[in-house]
Image (tube, rainbow, N blue to C red):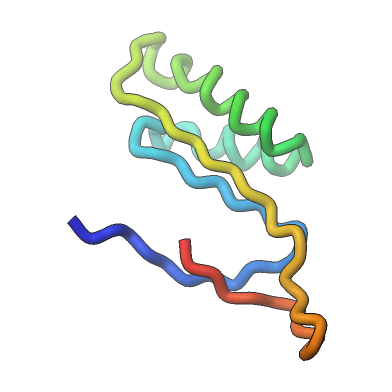
Length: 88
């Protein structure tokens, strides 16, 4: 199977959360709320994993994978660019 690829524009301090299909779409507002709280990403990932059972009535339907990343710097010092395109 071909891997999923998408090119996005990212800025310094942006956060990227990648979730496996074990995370139900009903959890997306919860994930957004966690990100808006400006919590450390390690804690965000832990909260998503911990609370995912609530969205599945306490039954694990699938394995859960959460990948959290923060863009630290995107500036190219030679060109002083403020964005960088990355493939995820």
